[in-house]
Image (cartoon, rainbow, N blue to C red; front, side, top):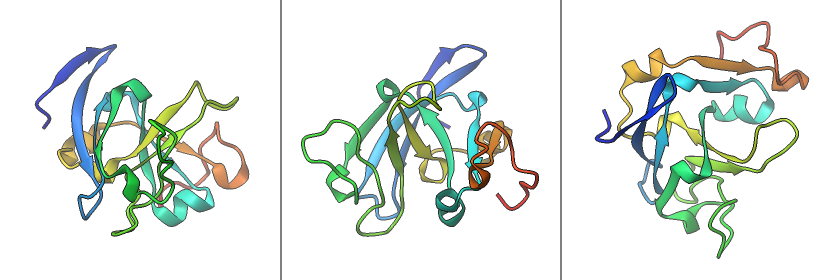
Length: 146
């Protein structure tokens, strides 16, 4: 359980701390899990077993190791991501605003949240996306494997 709670709509934001396996990449984020998490069946998400939560850039803080990420952009406060060059884990990635989303956000890998209690994750709603068929706004017919 996190040490910081902020009210946000129907749920509440908590400050979670996260890292990759080797802990070279560290971050914290204010997250309201009641707003939902996401799983997609596109090739990238499927192969990485990606389970994410959207975080607004103002609610995300890199705490160290950004230069260890495979898509690090020196001098950039945002826009980087990728996997850790040492342990191979992808802790987060910045997503730019596009016609399919509601503005830029940071996609955080929930498996990288060090102080996330399993019960809190189980209670969080999951939105399934059918990226495999470019049908992003609808769940795929089968989700048990995601």
